[in-house]
Image (tube, rainbow, N blue to C red; front, top):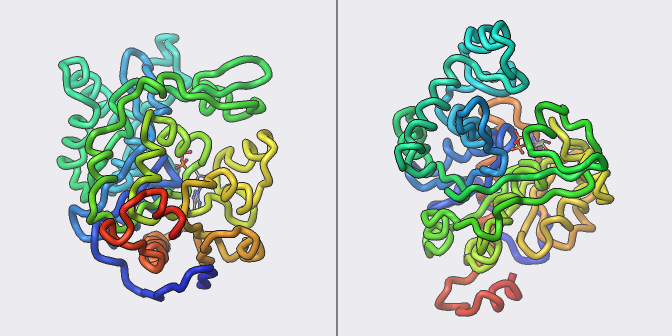
Amino acid sequence: MTTISPHPSTPADTAPAGRVLALCGGVGGAKLALGLQSVVAPGQLTLAVNTGDDFEFLGLHISPDLDTVLYTLAGLNDTARGWGRADETWNFMATLRELGAEDWFSLGDRDLAVHLERTRRLRAGETLTDVMGDLARRTGVNARLLPMTDSPLRTVVHTPAGELPFQHYFVKHRCEPVVTGISFAGASQAVANPALRQALADPGLTAIVVCPSNPFLSIDPILSVRGLRAALQDSMAPIVVVSPLVGGQAVKGPTAKIMGELGLDVNSQGIAEHYAGLIDGMVIDTSDAADAAGLGIPVHVTRTLMRSTEDKCSLAREVLAFAASMRLPSRTEAPGASLCKEVR
Ligand code: GDP
């Protein structure tokens, strides 16, 4: 564990007190979110979750990233398969197939109950925030689970053959098409989740963690919501990203493939460049330690591959200690946000 910082740092072995906000996509993000839930004091963790992957399937509102985070934090996820719920059965899908219905997106029987209930409540006028907050409470999640927005915002993947809705790219076409660009339909009209804005303005917020989620498909949709990037930049809490690359490769999914296709360096430098102007520090894996010196921001080098629960908790502790080591002056000491960024 090494911290390379142009600023003086205070080594800390324990998680700092105070409130924590994490930006999170699905499977990779949820791993660190679970660690954060374990080490942050109860009620002090807020998760801003990507809804750019949301879509309608068979008339149901599906929120894949929110559900992945919900199931993971509630201990209901299938760790062997890597997605969906544990102890799942597939009678609904099997019957759909017999009927010749669309079946490219798999919905387990238990999972289906969530989609049905969520869709019913949304149609009855509740917001996605209300529904997910209630589901989180009912399943014993100990963090505030916030969709980045309750407005419709949909990730669109641009390929040489044309534009693909996100789930068509990700699931139907198994991430095979070359990505030439990504856009977020509805982003400029989307209203940022008011609870998320409140969390960002909270003077008791001590760290903002960007989970090791796919920067393009999971974190950029959050940053695209009108006003959210600026609100993050204005926050007094340090923003720390955990790189989704381990040994210069994605642990799972198309992150490295997309970086190459978009002409970025597939290494920590490429990730740092992508987040330039937003982040104050970066956590990278020991296998990428050689990248640290060239990043130009404080870097913490440690094992970031999360296999066990202990891996997740210890990375969460280190990320928060790293953020605490770069704690910024309070608002009264540094009144202007632009000044804060210079101080950083
Ligand atoms: P998705 O929405 O389900 O694709 O999940 P995310 O966007 O949240 O996460 C995908 C990213 O997580 C990929 O780029 C992976 O490289 C990264 N990832 C998955 N597991 C780990 C891990 O244990 N450590 C690190 N550093 N990254 C991980």
